[in-house]
Image (cartoon, rainbow, N blue to C red; front, side, top):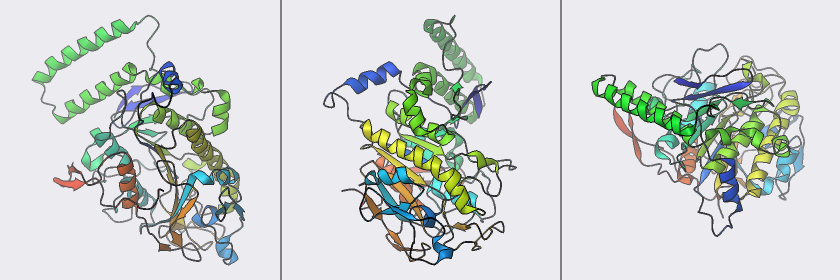
Length: 465
């Protein structure tokens, strides 16, 4: 992957060839907003995919079992929401107020209880191909949803179809990222564009997206044309093949960033202070605000990978709560999520974007129904919950999904699905179909040299209406 802009001081990094960004100017966006609904072109459908890295506890948050034994129901109390009959955790009050816009899909299920392979199953919609012994990527990885959208989707106004922010997931101390996040066996050239950096910093900004004061646009275009001419001459004599193709693709993407005024979209200082405050001064909150700006500018799929201060903890990373489950949820995770996710949903609704934008929030699995129950990790203590893939919850909002409903159900302890099971493959197929990408079409598997469908799942039925 080729670094495009160097980071410096609180200025972060944009990279290409699996990463980068784009956009319309704020004046162009303002003109679009000012148009009457009848005069505006029909918006393409889009998706914001919030990955809750680590695996949140379904029993403690959005599939509570208040009648179960204390060692199952835990310390938290359920509260009423805006929708009669639907209750969620007391530490998610903002979400409770937005429940009329949210569907709790309580029947997610698979069988992989190790982080890396489980992340891969959610990101790719395919069962992990190898033994559950590694958290790290290999050349055999299945292509991610983000890379499928990058290859088969279509961005508006020259923008890329798929963006990932603010990082590729990677456990501390490991040499490679977690499996399933890129084009992998479909080809790394199809990696989504990644915006990398701590966007939660108040003075966060990207460098390299604006021309120098003494470099007019006409001169920049002349340089670009000269480069293209020289590249053509070199290409005629080059034997680099695929490497040359990737280099050309990266240069074209880099040029597109400048040509489409990426700096305007990525510049969060253009948002009113009240809006930034609404999402919260966290990496997740500001990443979701940036995701909204990207969707608004015409990017079909934006993947936001959860990041908080515990992302460098090798035992209880992000939503992984092997120890002190309730304290971590109450004091760190719930406040960040409740503020940022609820702000995103309400903000999209107020801007008329929620109807066409599907918002998905899900982790790689849930947590054990019983406190201290061992399923995979010897680090699990009596105060924590271990990994549990057999039943967990995905939150869906917008994109034609009917809010204020519960889809699927689990048994009395939240451990197993008893109604309307949904696999990672089904969720992937549903998102692809929403984006207008046929899940049944194929790509060439460069590792095994055969054609494969984008998804082996089925579009989840009964979510709309």
